[in-house]
Amino acid sequence: MVVVMKQDAGEAEIEAVCEKVRAVGGEAFVSRGTVHTVIGLVGDTERFEAIPFGQLPGVDHVIRIGKPYKMVSADLHPSPSTVKVGPAVIGRETFTLIAGPCAVESYEQALTATQAAKRAGATILRGDVFKPRTSPYSFQGLGEQGLEILDACRRETGLPIVVEVVDVSHVQHVAEVADCIRVGTRNAQNFELLKECGLARKPVMLKRGLAMTVDEWLQAAEYVAQRGNADVILCERGIRTFEPSTRNTLDLAGMAVAQRESHLPVIVDPSHAVGKRALVGPMALAAVAAGADAVMIDVHPDPEHALCDGPQALVPDEVVALGERLAAVARAVGRELASEAEPGAR
Ligand code: PEP
Ligand code: MN
Image 1: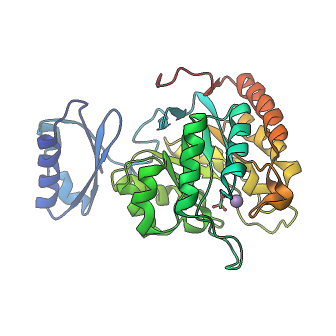
Image 2: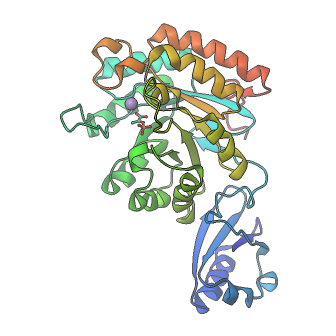
Image 3: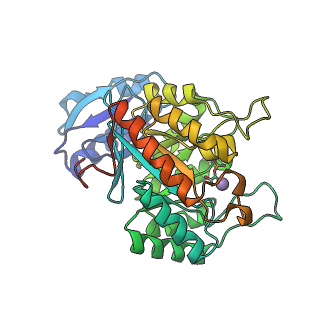
């Protein structure tokens, strides 16, 4: 059960609802959205039925959602929500390009990739400083120094940054520096990490786990939303299947299912899905045509010498050319380009 508060409900009214829920042995999770505050109830539904929510001051309405995810369910918000990442937006009416290096390696490498991303029409920069690598002998990221480099790239170009977090202990610090934090595939069901991200005051991009169903992915997103952070962006990045010719199998149908089942923006990372440069463009274009709210592309000025994921990285001229084609497809399917939208219009 979810209690939706009136737009002008005050803190005392929100607390009074939580108090009633606790008085019957339940737990109340408050999630403050841009328009409404919603309170998710956990416990014995029969006991909640006895609470006269409709008569409590500040309560707008109550929704009964019979799914294991409630705060992120389309039943809660029949109209899709928009998430702001710094000055940029990701939502169902716009198309947003996110691009940048898989891993930050140096200031020169990151800045060249960032400038290419911007020329391609990207309004958000991706770049990682903690890399969850399959092998412990692979490059693990620059850590704090990498965050400083990303901050410098942001100052240089104005692009907000999205950065992966891999450990509970650094979520709050990364969230102070980054405009959006990301939970990667390998941590998509690390529930303690998800809960900590739910306490962060920045949007959270949640990648789909390698072997996660859409339903499990939405339940993982619920962990973040339930702790109070309603600004979640889902990212389809390919799943493990029997097919070895691409790194993973891009599940565009899964993206479309997530868009129907949830009000959250859903984006696609074709780079990590296919793992091969030549296939990134075709899958990015397909994602936009299928309705992805954004695509996220790896860029590297010198992929041959990249410390991480070189074979899938586009070089600057390639991402710029792809950006033009993505914009054309986005317009053809009725999307406004986020790069051309009025900043702060949504
Ligand atoms: C990444 O985007 O660099 C990354 C590590 O992705 P994933 O978690 O999807 O493997
Ligand atoms: Mn990568």
